[in-house]
Structures are given as C-alpha cells and as structure tokens.
Length: 123
Image 1: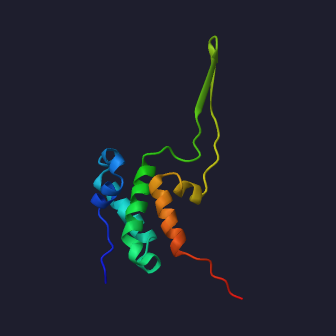
Image 2: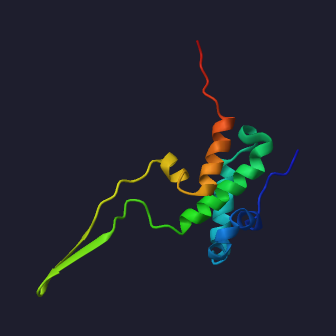
Image 3: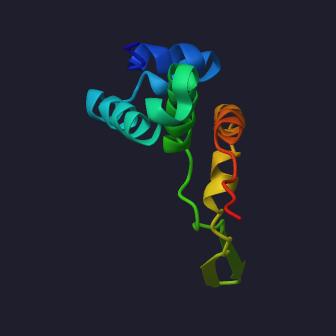
C-alpha cells in the first residue's frame, strides 16, 4: 500500500508564494491542518491522486486560516460633530463550495474532487 500521508513541508511547498505567512503557524495549528486534510481526503475516494489532493486542500485550509471569518462585515462609522455611530455591514456567508473556490489551491482541489466523484444513478 502506498503512503499518501503529507507533512507540513508538503503544504509549504504547495503554497510557495504564501510560505512566509504559513511559517508563523504553531505546531498545533500545523497538526490541525494535517489531521483535517487526512480525515477529509481518503485514499479510497482519491486513489493515486490522494497525496496531490491532500497537499492542495492543506494549502487551501492554511490560506483560509489567515482570512477574516465569514459573516463578519466591514465596520462603518460616521461622525457628525460630537456624535458618532458605528455599524457592521452584513455579508452573506459563503456556501462550502464558494469557500473552496476562494483560493487557487481550493479550486485545484475542487477540480480533482469533481473528477473523482461522479453522480450515481439508479434506474
């Protein structure tokens, strides 16, 4: 059986342009990314593309860890004389698919996943 496990170095090599940002993650954060990826990308579903899919999903998750949480809008403030007000502008939460498509790594992972999963029809 082939070893499709990935390391943090694999994630860093996949996301070379973001490498500097990812190097600040603690070992606990790094482990969390690897564990999530290995749980979500099984060899049974991805076959020989397992390691590639894991590297891409790991880079996507690491990139998303550096983003503002979904649902939090832009703070807006207004002042008139000595009176001021602040409000958070609402945003729509992205769907899981939209979130996956928000990074180049997620888009590449999505294409691999799409090629591996075909609709199953009974009839």
